Length: 277
Image 1 (cartoon, one colour):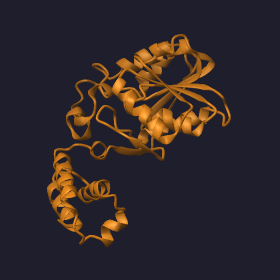
Image 2: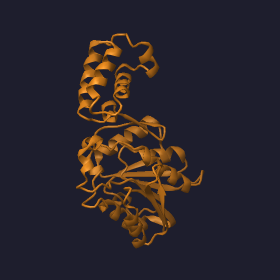
Image 3: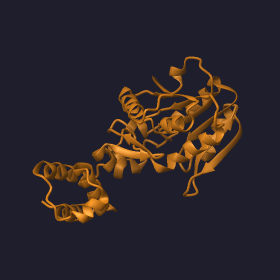
Image 4: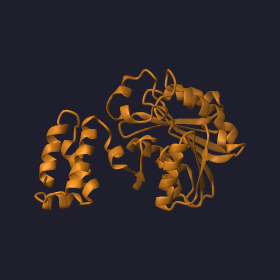
């Protein structure tokens, strides 16, 4: 099988299930062969080895079933950081970079703050902040040991040392610690949301997506508990659903936060809320 033959085969196989069948084929080829995208074009008539062909066909079959490319290749870039992924963690979304942007806007360039990321998953948000603010100490928590293993692997590969990982539910691992900033991209999908049975979401860990009947269960816990772990003037930033801003604002107010505001993503949706204690 040549490179071009695999591309043609994949385009046909994925036509009904993927909006980007050719790109999918190229990503799988780059992953298996180690070739660049440009090389795929210039060497399109070259034959792939039998072991490579077997791997490609196996990965293509999984992609046809809808499995996300990030899980097939085990990689996803976030904040220009190449992250390793497994099916134990949520795939980082581009819109979550807004949470990082807003966090960095709060942190002076040479501050030596303690910053906490709750529900770190792959470590995407925590590692992005730690890489941009090397004088800060970042603590990343998660209730999943498997997720923390992925995050630790990413920290090691990226040689980011100013980060610490703690196992436990939300703020429980902080044990009385107070910090200047808490950030979180918690699960915020309602249990009955039909999107859970569509696309990539079918393959992602349900516990990293679903948060009770209304999607607000984790946010309630985090927002209510955060003030006890923030210094005076400290801030909380959370990502939430596009239609949850009003409910989240009320949770912030009930917990005693002031200066509450929403930040819109590139699609114009209120995606991040912040408040100061």
